[in-house]
Length: 422
Image (cartoon, rainbow, N blue to C red):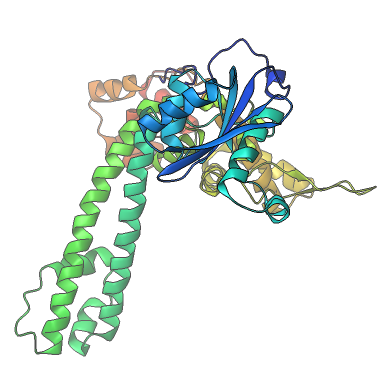
């Protein structure tokens, strides 16, 4: 089970929650980050600019930046723009120096139209955001297994998109191919079409048929190579997500893809999320108040991490098909007059609350190795069990290996094996 630790970016300095919004004696820093140069500013506790300077975006520049800030007084907090990109190295360095770091969003468009846009203005705005509590979010630490998952997922998504593009190109070649070739390949599904095309032995390329076969063979072999890479990357993600948070993987409706998205959204230091409402807002699943006068209403949150929002939607869709509790909730809400869309929004908010608990305080995952032990001791195959329980052998195998969770199927399986009493 994952060991949660204190984030390097939010050291325990003995401050309470209100200290994030109450200026304390000392100076506050702000940094506008870029690829080659970081522009830093320091302000005092009244918000007055003390100094602005530029530093190289490397380890030497980071040390000089910290020393320069500390020459102006006791450094309380530093606001950094782009902690997930150009500011990642600086955020790590500041965390290593036990300096409190907050992630600063770029100024909104109204502020930029009013004050203009340059690096000095952005650095000053970052410093004031750290001072007045406008920026309170601790950045992701990027120093654990979740960072490996993030990197692997980038490669996975890129490979998957490229494979889809190649499949579409192969399909288009079939549509425009000579009649005989088209009749042979058009009825086939993509895997069968790829297998057939990869075994072509084209002749003279001046013949359009042979030229088309050469192109198809090239694309088919690229597709096969990408499929092998996808299988490897999916296996790595399966292993790492299970190692990072077994309880999350054990949740109903959470597979490799969904788990990797949610872990990346939370980062290696999910304790930076102060509440389940914060996670819901991060995932764009929290309703936003849009009331005025006597009108009390809420609107949808169109912001947040849209991939994480999609992950919550996928969990809801899976549970609507296989989870009795979710189905019962849906029927109750539908009887109250809620539409399907409104019910799914409610489910996403509820799921966000559950995911928050799994990310920040994961419970111990039940050991299911006894299922396979009892089955093999009784001499039953996966097919026999699947037939008896009216399911697929793959579902039984996944349940035994802990890949998926299905409480209802597990309960019936244990009764069938004699491990539990009905």
